[in-house]
Image (tube, rainbow over all chains, first blue to last red; front, side):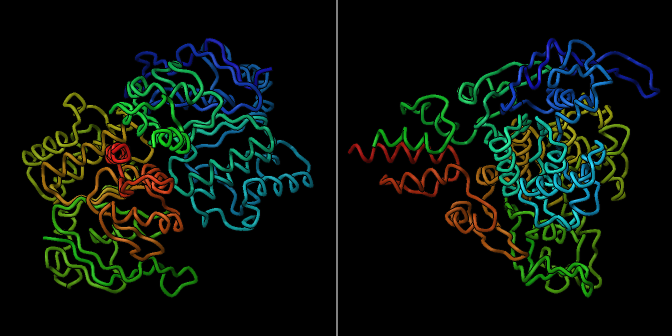
Length: 283
Length: 285
């Protein structure tokens, strides 16, 4: 069974004028099919306003479709009786670390999720410890969250989601507000979780370097999925990506620039090592 | 015409348990017309530093001269400094508030006491400088896209015709094209008006591409100061303080290590491509 599946997903919202009268409908998601297998790492790219976040919010039923269907772990998100189960199987991490931490002590914040799920106290403590260990934040368990760096706060947010033992984590631009170190920290943590716990990962990002290990990349534009493939397939199409206001990792850009100047290098180079190898064949 | 900081120290919450030395002995001169970049990881002191530049923070000790005048002298007119040094904060679009874009951009010059005709002229000029088309002037700023909102917010600062423009991570949260657009616009602005631009950024690739000088902050101190080539040559030291060089710089170093006879100081894709091709030809000779 698919972890996340959508068929002909549509999401419309009402546009209102200053007095609150409905003046028309706006379509943020326009007929999308999604299939994510358990354990997969799927990245979603797209410019600001392309519908990525709206799609992500369907994955744990913060939004329910206006048309079509979204299933999370086989459960239809339109069915209110499934809500708790859905939220438990798909956890979400948002962009701004300061908007999603509520506890005054790190471990209290991480325990909030499982407590809400009605997990017995002893089990909560076990989960808190285990989750903080997984994100490398155990030594901060008694610290105040507001003294942590951005990257550390995001790792606490991820631990908070992990404590609910989800099968899937949806991350909506988790690194957008972080410095290079914080970005690395968060991505490394997510990749490790995937490897050790086989958690399904859906990552929305504007940083092309973060998606080169994905199994599948979706590119969104105007509420539709306009490109879909492996990172290599997607990043081979530099011009196409530019059309959608995106770019490629700098290594890929350099390879492309060399090709443009007549150096015979294969398309779709994603990593530094690949480029070095291709170049060293010439010398 | 320049910004001159001499031995600036700044301490937060002095005398309390939270006392923190955010800046330690920072000396810096930025001549008029320079396009400078400031990098440093979170908590390195770069935001504290730039807040000194328009007098939002006053140094605990040290001297600050703007165009040769002592900013910390008792009779110095802070208002003058603030109208000459425009500061664009992170996520500046959060500060948009007026009913439409045009009125919002007029707010700054209005506060400077200019007539409405002058305000409108300034607003129009500023909106043109950031490349926001006229059809948006009468729209609510909240209906614009992320990139457009940010342009409107930058225009709000430009309308005060500052001599120095300080931008704190102007591209955070924007999509790649939005990032390029804003930076191109800033570079264009710099060429066209000759104003000093100080860009704070987490993206080494962006910094390398646009600025002529980089100041690296670490633990409240100025760690490095030089051209992008000079600064990124210290890529190992940068890594130790949570920063990095642009990806292409690493490729050049790796090629050199593998025996290529090339220079390693390329910091942009174009420079790297050129040098790699030169290196290839060289070895065929």
